[in-house]
Length: 130
Image 1 (cartoon, one colour):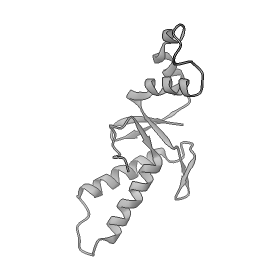
Image 2 (image 1 turned 90 degrees about the horizontal axis):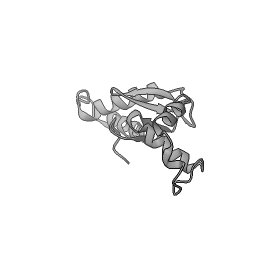
Image 3 (image 1 turned 90 degrees about the vertical axis):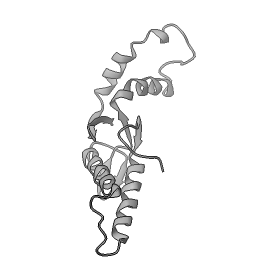
């Protein structure tokens, strides 16, 4: 499983859910009296549960615990690259062509695409979902 942090350009919500379930199992398997609070795993679980709460109900194709979640989260600083990759993937542009593809204002294209996305916070970093 990939490391999940707010430095990732793209986060798959299914990885977040799997890690939350894994951490909950670890927490629940501890013997009584073991101090879970304050551990790195406890903080990680708290952060990931907060992210899930932020994303819950913002569209999505992934159902978990009775709520719907968007599958892909795109870091704000990566969104322009994401917009260009998406345009290439859907055939909107030919990535091998020169003019006029090399004249596209990708910053503006990303801003316009972003209007169809919802922002959510992950440790002070904005991620966009659809």
